[in-house]
Image 1 (cartoon, rainbow, N blue to C red):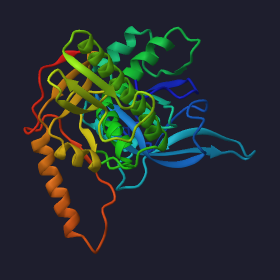
Image 2: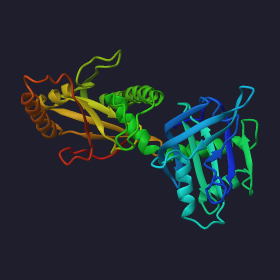
Image 3: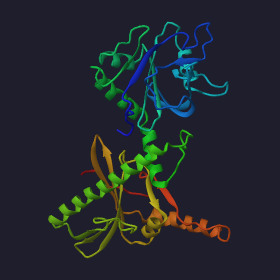
Image 4: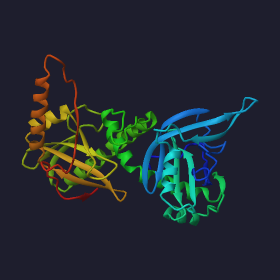
Length: 357
């Protein structure tokens, strides 16, 4: 799982009151939290990317968080506030959703932090699947409940697994986007229009480095088996000892002496996840008579392989357009390096059948 619970190791939860939901005459402008959860946050902060999960979807919304300063100088009674009139905040989002249901619907809020110091707010009502799921885990969701769970509590392990699964399933599209961003040094989410957290980018880069190596190791094993069966004459893994810097990962000599150059493109997600190619790789692929793409991807927690044995047509077109662009701005600027995100299901790429690795 990409997203993991903060080392604070606490999960707060409460039944939301009519005042919390803006359904009373009190004009309350906040939802109160607990002193011992989200302790890593400063006493007053506007968080632009608090993660809100509702009905299986993820939103990144503003959380106006603060604590009250007492006469003795201590800070306590943390809360999230509605924010400005034109701001879609965590509180305003929850209240908007509550208005879509009858006034006797009971709403619940769970909150905790992630490793990246990002707060998460999970909201649901008593007619949802989440309500039944959490009740079955042994968590009390009676009217008026206000509590927290810690590792020593019996229900903690089951709830933690459930919530981390919910966060990662709801945020899978975001995690997929992070995998691509980690390869191209992109710092802002195009889909969610928020800057990525440095922690998340650095974690995505570490994970991608690991799975990239893992993908090449699997292909190395694949060719080792082909060599033993007499299907190929020889192969050379260029990055076996260290990263070679070459625009390909393997060179394979077929039985007839022909040479194949190939790049392994690995993802932690589905086959359809975009593949990143540098301008140098594109130029090499366009000029190489036999250039293949070995696509390693995950499905049902297993690794699979599809092979494209004819990528030259696509890369010839891409290379032609990039050269034309470089020429069009010549004298104004130089293009030093370009990275391109290519969809594997592009009609100019012909991938073969799926193989289990």
